[in-house]
Amino acid sequence: MAERVPFPFTLIDARHRPFVNGQRDTLLTLSQVVRSGNTVAFVTLWLIGLLCLFFGGRSLVYDLSVTWKTADAVITNITLLPTPPENSYKYWYFYEFKTEAGEIVHDHIVDDSAEAHATGDVVRVYYVESNPKDNYYADDPLPRGVRDWFFVGLGAFMLGGGVYCMRSALSNYRALRRLAYSGQPLPGEIISSQSLMVDDTLLKIDYLAKTADGSPFAAGDVTMAIAHLAQPALPSVGTKVAIWYAEKEGAVLL
Image 1 (tube, rainbow, N blue to C red):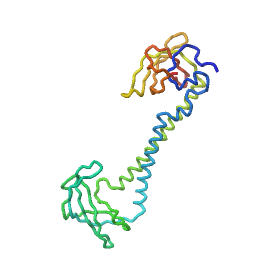
Image 2: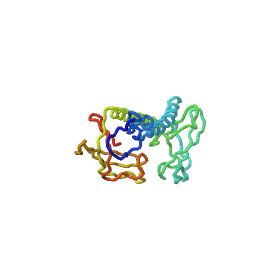
Image 3: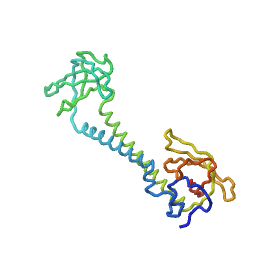
Image 4: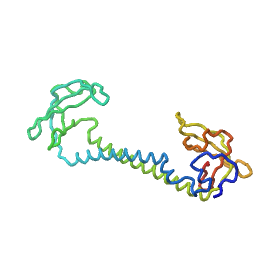
């Protein structure tokens, strides 16, 4: 097949080489789009979202399926102990309470303050009727029910964000297909290029497209991974390039 660009130029994005050589009819293949940052974000967000929904939802379903009771617990001891995960010292307020069935249960409250409770104080606790060892302090500033709903909401938000990223990736692919079929090559040159990341993984290139007679036509820019560069060296200012352009679809730096 004949090369699609009829004038001398330097290929900037290696992913467009097959298109330039006439081997296919789209600027990017679907597999290249699938390997894009949007797809990586989709997978990451969905993994985190599913984990949040699983753990938060499982705990929430359990809390809604059991019978909860209330009891008055008495603070029996106060001890300063190392507490994970940061292993800082916090105050452990040990309490005991009696269930409606007469069972004595012991547990504790962890707090940063040395004055949260005093020995002999009475605090309200909730416990599971069938398993009183499953209990928690009623006045906890972040009760487990709130945490459960938070993780469920966070999981749903992550899944929604993942769907948005995947839709963006597929929308980009469809737009590039339309541009490939309706566009034409224009000569241009690079007017600036700069790294956007400390580790030099992203590059921003500003270019100027020209008409066939060399008159300035339109300016544009592209952000790309340096790993996608077709040349071993970074493109310099004044490098002659080709821009694939269509009036209604936009432009892509080849």
